[in-house]
Length: 347
Image 1 (cartoon, rainbow, N blue to C red):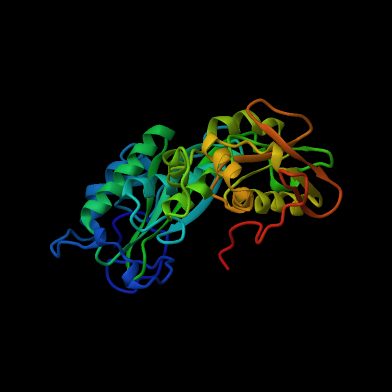
Image 2 (spheres, rainbow, N blue to C red):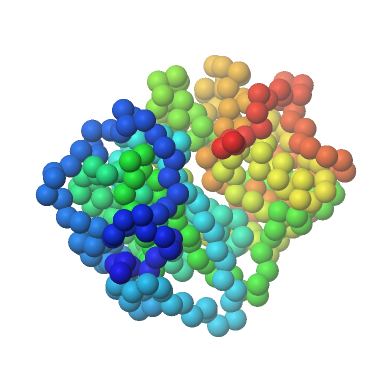
C-alpha cells in the first residue's frame, strides 16, 4: 500500500506509482543527484521529510492512507489548480532544491491569486531521479515548509516515484473563494483597461543572466524574480471583485492577454511605453532595445493581468480591450513591435 494519499493508480513495480515525467539525457543530471547507496527508501523518505508538512491537516491522516479528506469552509467555493515543473524546462538543474520547491508552490498560487482565492492546502507529486541524494530531498521539503508557513497552507497528500529522466514535480493547490465568483478569462468588456500588477520582464531577463547572455546593474534582483516568483495573493483578493477578467502572466504578457482576448471575443492593444519596469530591466532595455520582445513574450512574470472599466489601486494600465481579434503591440518607439513568438509553448 502507498505511504500517503495517491494521485496515480498504476504501479510499474512494488512501492512506486507512475507520474508524468519528460525523458532527459542522463548527461544533463547535475552531480547533486548522486547518492549514497544506503539512502532511505520511499516510505522512510516520506515519513521523514513530508509527513511533518501534513501534521496540521487532520484530513491528511499523517500521509499513511490512500486519500485525504477536506471539508469546504462554510459559504465558500473551492478553487483548484495544478501546475508541473520539470528540470531543464522550468528551472535549471542546478538550482537550489528549496527554491525549486518554493517555485513549484508559487506558480500554482499565482493562479489562485488571479482569481482572488486564498490558499488552503495542496497535493504533491514528486518524480525524483533514481539517484537523487537524500539531502536534496531534505532541502526540497524545507522549501515547501517555508512557503507553507508564509502562505498559511498545508500538505494533504500526493505521490512519490522514481524516474530515469529529469526531476519533475506537480502540485495541485486548493483554495477558497467567498460567494463562488471569480474573474474568468472570458469576462473582458470592450473599452476595458488592461491592468497589471508589479513589473514585467524581470524573470525572462533573469534567465538570460543565468545563461550568461546578459549583465545588468542588479542581476540578483532579476535572478530572484526568475527563481522565486511572488504570488500576488493579497492584491488578487483586493482586485478580484472589481475585475471583469483576470489571468496570471506565466507564458508571457502577449500570450496570456491573447487568452483573455480570445475567450472574451475581443482584441487588445498594449503600449510598451506604459509597461512597468524594474530599474535593472529598464537599464537593460535602454542599452539594448532588441530585448523588448523578451519582456513582452518571455513569461515567468507571475503578475496579475486583469481588465476593468477604470484604473484600480496597485495596478498599471498598459492598454485597452477593443473590438476585433488578436493582440496589437505598440513598441516604445510608437511602431508595431514584431514578436518571433507571443509566449512560451510546450509543443
